[in-house]
Amino acid sequence: MNFWLVKFAPFRYSWQDVLRNGKFEIYSVRNAQARNNLKEMKIGDEVLFYHSQEGNCIMGKMKVIEEAHQDKTTDDIRWISVTFEPIDSLNTPIDLSVIKATKGLENIGLIKQPRLAVIKLGKEEFDLILSLKYTPW
Image 1 (cartoon, rainbow, N blue to C red):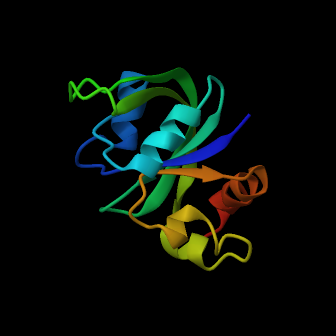
Image 2: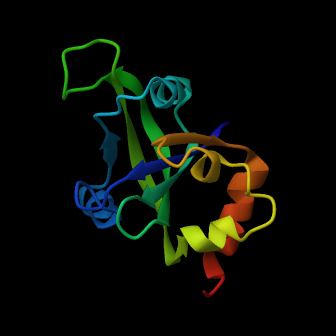
Image 3: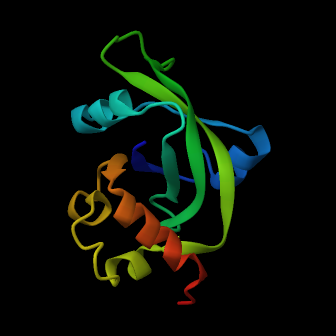
């Protein structure tokens, strides 16, 4: 199993939208590294959902329910989508400032490549991030 973080702007599709609709399909990813990460995702992989551009925090956890398929927003076969299902909402969103201040997370893609929308995490990093979910800030 692999572990991921997916960023999406809440004014386009928020965590509340994910919960209301029971799924989330990431689309319009036009970065080659992010696309390659999407291609690597497998059913059951665990994924953190991050509000980008507004809020800048992790809102919940999802799992992959449909592997890479054609992105419906383009006819260009290079670009793909993946579909996720929510599995857990965080009682307290994990703010980017908390992640940045946590020893052991300084080298994750969220910090080192802040514009990347689909980021692979190690299990230890994933678990460390989730351990922060009850940390007040």
